[in-house]
Structure formats: C-alpha cells, structure tokens
Image 1 (cartoon, rainbow, N blue to C red):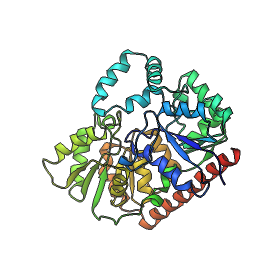
Image 2: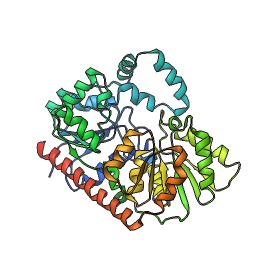
Image 3: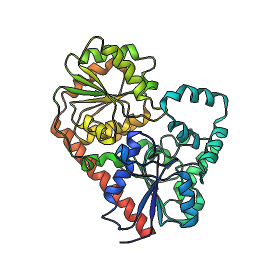
Length: 385
C-alpha cells in the first residue's frame, strides 16, 4: 500500500527515555504497512541519532508542512501528550540545571501567558502542541496511539474542551490504562485499551545476558525530596546483597534524575563500593541496563515497561499515578506498585518469589498486544487516508 507522507508528533527532542522510544516503535512497524515517508515532529526538532532515536523536525517545520503540502495523516505518538502545553514542552527542553529558575518564573507569571510566549517563540500552529486542532483533523485523518488520559480532568476548561473535541474528531484512539478509559468514557468518548507502544522494546533491542546479583534504581529529584535519608538507608541495606546501578532515565528539564541520583551516589559511595552512577548516552544504554538486571526499582513508567518486556521484576515507587495505573492494568500480579521509600527492601525481597518464566511470558504477551494495537492504528490511518 502506498500513500503520501504521514507525520507523527511527540516530545522527541529531549532525552526523556519513553518519548524517544515512540518514533522507533512507529518506524519498526511502518515498512510492513507502507513504502511512503514517515516524518516526525517535536517542539524544536532533533537529529535523533545521538540518542539512538529518529530525527525530528520542529514545530515551525510542522507549520510549513501542514500549510505547503498537507500530509496524508497524523499520528499522535503516545505518552502524556494530551495535557502538554507549550510552556511544559519548553521548560522540559531546558537543561535540568535551570529547574529552580524556571520554577521561580512560573510562580510569578501565569502559565497561560508563558505558554502563549513559548508558542510564539516556537512558531507553533495548534493551541496545544501535541494535540492537532479541529481544522487539522478535518483536513486529514488523525490517530492517537496508546496515549495517557489520566490528566485530562486537570486541564483548564478551555484546554479540556479542545482535547476532547480533537479526540472525538480522530479516526482512532487507544489509551494505555483502565483509568484513562474510564475518564474518557465519563466524557462520552470510547477508546481502545492497549499496552504502551514501547512494550515492544524487546523486538527493537535484543535482550542482553542477565547479570546475577544486580539491581537498577531510578527516581526523580521531585520524588526524592523529603525521603532521601530513608532511600539511602534502604539502598545501603540492599547493597549488601546486590550491585546497585543508579540509572538516570529522565534527563530532560523538570525530570532531574541525575540531580537525585548524584546525591544518592555521593552518600552511598562513602560506605560501599557496590553502587555506581549510570549516565546513559542513548536509549540502548537504558534498555540494556534494565534488561540485564535482576530487578528494577523506580518512578519511571517506561523504565517499568522496559523491565516487564525483558522479564525483569518491577518495584514501582509511590506517588506516580500514571505508573501505578499502568501496573494495575497490565501487571497486577507480576509487579509491585505504589511502594513507599520505607519498604523498598521488603518489596525487592518479595520480587525474589516471582516465577521468572511467568514474568517473561507477561512481557511477551504485552509485546504482542502492543504490536497488534500499533498495527491496527496504522491500518486505520492508511485506509482513512
């Protein structure tokens, strides 16, 4: 089947692990469906290959594309795209060392003014950066692939109306957890339930050998605040039995994994040599570290999705609603969720009782379901175009 150019939109221009996986997933499924071009667009655009992902154009490039040669379709590529504002994407593209300055700015300037300024600076076309407006949806088929919708009800009235209107105008919509299904249903919108599209990561990157006695830990600066002493105590106890990798997954502004993990490393390395700080260069580094470990403990949704895909036991930390909802939907009996800092050791011990063959089968099942959902989305898009 052939068709003119198709585009995807997402946050592909910052090192946030999950976002960088989405274009790789699309490109892995695309050749079997079409021999036409699939192009990716983000806020500022990125070369992509430095991070092991696909190249993306900018919001200004997207405006030119839509006005000069309208594509045959648009894919909203997954993740927490529905609630993202121009200001959100801009502040997440700023190095995390500026997080405190950015926080001070948005305490003094209304967010709607900041978003308006960021949209003008980026040359953006739509009121929300990753949600095609009604005009675009009328011009071409738009599909939404395994997005998160748990934040829809937190939007302002105007933005919520825009998002819901765009979803209704779309040709296909899948969401990644039961809570998202329920929230959209309360607004009269039906959506397919599908695992996150990155659940096929085991098909993208071959599984490395397991490293017995290793544990990956990850968290953000925001999550660590107020719990640092407890986490240090728990990790120090675990270091008696495990080699611990402190893995930074979210390196974009506002995520601050490195800030948190450097603090932990400085404290832990004073009393043990069984801990190391891992600063990944590309997405393969992240996947390999998690896939080869005996266990994963963290706040990252896509860290957990990667662990599940490779049969690595998961301990999902608390106060991360999208992570808790996803694990409750897809791995209720094969992952621990909503785990407090004070019970990390206890929870890691519980995962040792999991049947590793069953964990691997859960990963394979979700990978197959995710691939089928992405293929269904692409088929609907191309047939509509």
